[in-house]
Length: 398
Image (cartoon, rainbow, N blue to C red; front, side, top):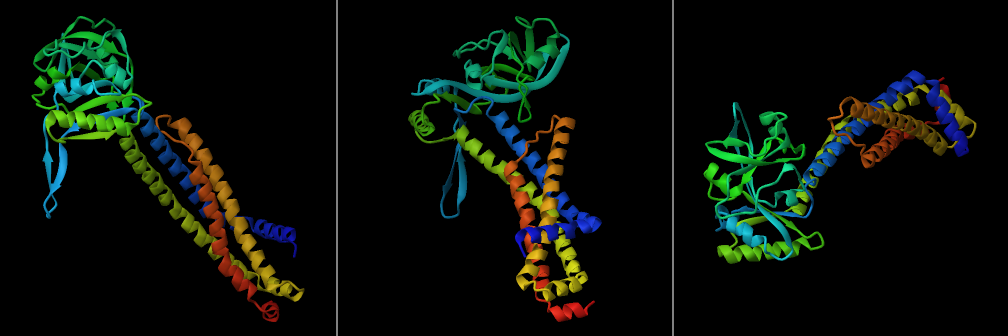
C-alpha cells in the first residue's frame, strides 16, 4: 500500500468516528493547553523579574559586611562580621574602573509633615545613587556629596511627596523622621516597584544620618558602579585588595550582579520547568486514552484486518495503518491543544494585564513533539496486536 493511500485510509477511519476521536484527543488537547498556559505564565514571570532586577543597570557590584568561613572537622560555621563604614565607601570610589560608590542603610520610620504622618521606607545613601541606580530628580536636587558631618537633608519619592504635601512644592519644607528633623531638598521621578519594593514610597537621607537614626554601627551594603568595558573579575579583585588592605583580612562578601542574575535565572528556569511538568500530567492521561481507544479499535475491526490480510496486505501494512491512526489522533489533539493554549494566553494577557505572560515557544514545540511521541508509543502495542492476527482466524471472527 502506498503511503498516500495509507494516510488517506487512516484519516477516513479517524473522522468516521468523530465523537470517539474527539473524546480521545480531548485529553491531549487539555494537556497541551495546560502546558502552554502554565509555561507562558512561568516565562512571563521569569522575564518580568529579570527586567525588574536589571532596570538599574547590569554593571553593579555590592559589598556586604561579614565573611562566613568553616573551621575544624565538625564543619562549624563562624560568621566574622566587621563593620563597613563611610570611609570604606570613599576609599572604594577611588579604586580603578569604579565610576561611583554609595553606602546603603535601610529601615522603616514614621514621617511627619505638618499634620500628616505615615510610616515608610527610609534609605540612607550617598550622593552617587542617581548615577548608580539610574534614577532622576524631577524637582530640586539630590543629597550633597558625603561630608564628615552631613546636614539633615531628605529627598522624597514621588508618591510620598504627593501624599505628604499634595500639589504644593515640598522643597525647603521641614519634616520629621523618627525623632530627627530634616529639610526636603528634592523629589524623585516616578520609578514604580522593583520586585515588590515601592521606589516611589521611599525617602532618601544621608547614610551617616541613617546610621544614627537606626542605631547601627555598620552599613548594610556598599553599591558600586564600574565601567561597562571592564571585566567584572578584574574589578572584583581590585575591590578585594582595597578592603583587605583597610581591614587586615577578608571580612566582607562581594556579590556581582552577574552572580545574582545567574542564580535568579536558574531558579526561574526551574520554576518554569516545574509548571511544565505539572501540565504534562494531563498529557499522560491523554496517552492512556489513546492506548485504550486503539486497543478497542483493534478488537472491533478484526474482520476488517482479516479481509485486508486475505487480499494481500502484509503484516507491516496493518501495523503502519493502526500506528498512523494513533499518530493522527495525537497530532490533531496536539495541534488543537497548542491553538487553544495560545488563545487562552492571549485572553489572559488582555483580561489580566498585571499578570506577566509570554509564550514559551521552546516548551510549546516540545509539548507538541511529546504529543506525537505519545501517539506513536500508545499506538505501537495495538498495532502490533493487529499485525499478528492470522487472516483465517480474523475472518472467522465475522
